[in-house]
Length: 99
Image 1 (cartoon, one colour):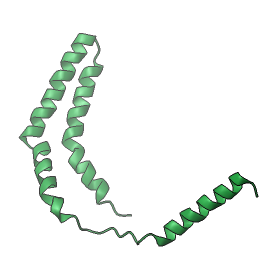
Image 2: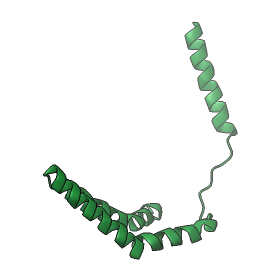
Image 3: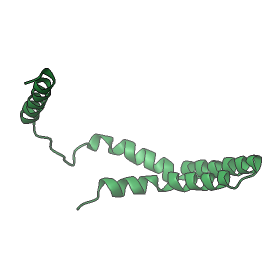
Image 4: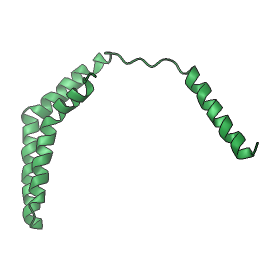
């Protein structure tokens, strides 16, 4: 057996051994200590602060579009504002999705 084959076989064997020795990974509904942070950030993004940031995105995009002579700055500003406002809903739907 050549050295490279022997090294490859050793790596595979060590990897399998580590996988078998790994503790079970359990996903659960824990992590409730972060609920307050999630609620705070969601409130900011979906509330008045999020609306202010979204309108700033639109204004900056509009100015960038006028300076560059292209509407793409305005489109990116609108997309950023909508993305900011919709992000908590999208994240919640992705994380709580069931198959």
